[in-house]
Amino acid sequence: MALLQFGTTLVFGVPPLWNNENQPNPDIRKFQAVLVGVLGTVPTLTLAYVTAPFAHQVFLQIPEYARRSRQDLMHFARTLRTNPKGTANTKLEFVTLRIFPFRKHTTAFLHELRALPPMKMRLANIELPKTEAWAQRQREKGIFKRMAEVIQEPRYKFYVKEGRLYTMKTGVPGVWEEVARRIQDQTVAEKDETGYSGLGARKPVVLRSVGQMKLGKEMDKQRLKRHTSRPVHR
Image (cartoon, rainbow, N blue to C red; front, side, top):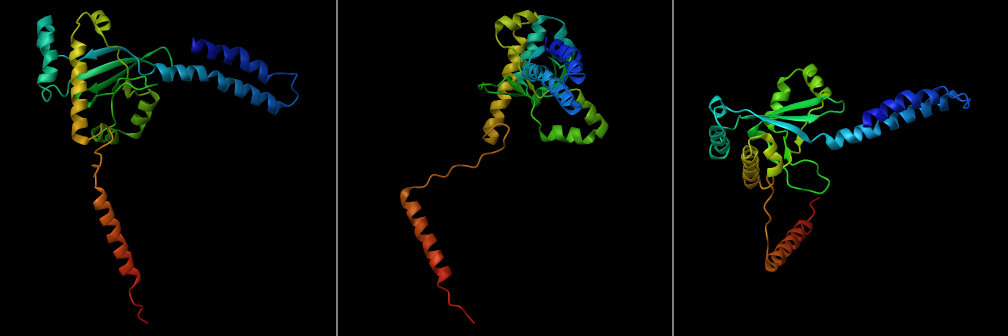
């Protein structure tokens, strides 16, 4: 709908303003036409930004034995939490929408994903943080390849609907729940290690008593007095 509105503005709104004979000043005509064309992109860009994290589909890479039966699949899903090191490089592919009506595919390793806490006006619950490993992979790519990825609208945040009602539609309920728990577990583990997830370690807060604060002030005064009472040698 937003693309239809933009196309209508571009085809039927901009040309009449550009060729408006009632406006004798050509500069004003061009300014009005360009302004209307730019404003016509606002709904499209807003819709693209708001709907960008919403995942239409999520594909999980599974080994060959997990394809045999549902029991084997659930066994593999449970190993995502019981054996985090062995399943760290399990790939997930998120299918989201783009500005144009084409689907966007984003692939990430399971160990790279982090859970986002609920927050007002936040439209995502999973994040692909730009870690040092990610930055190293970007540096290894050529400049033209990086430019092509920017044009492809990369995604770093995703919103996956939760709840039994949505996972039942996949035909294998319970698998995504294990994936989500794994992402939550590694997010909590990283938070415990760094003190604050995604922003590095926080400095410890040192609590001092009133006596210690007074003693510190007296020592500062003595240092200042010693510093200013030195004799001047000429």
